[in-house]
Image 1 (spheres, rainbow, N blue to C red):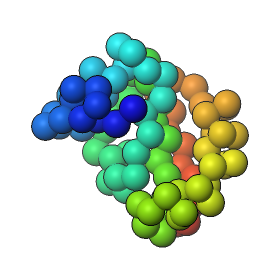
Image 2 (image 1 turned 180 degrees about the vertical axis):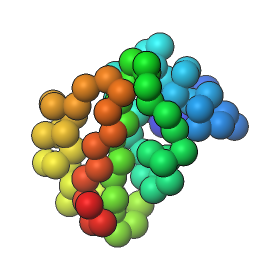
Image 3 (image 1 turned 30 degrees about the vertical axis):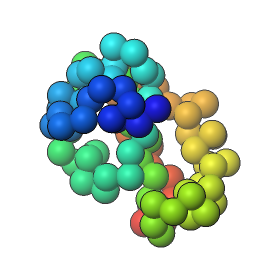
Length: 86
């Protein structure tokens, strides 16, 4: 589900996390600065940051296995980065 599909369009990153953690366990983003802008202390949600060459599906699919592995292991309040620039 995307941010607009969830009805969260126009929210700041902090607001997004607050809304998302009521329904989701993991927030997946391509925003490279997201992890540095947020304090996850006490959060019930984890963040998976995908560092891909672009937002094209072909580039994102290259990281599918790493994403699956990360999602299986991630804990609330953690940030895991997969892809280039690790």
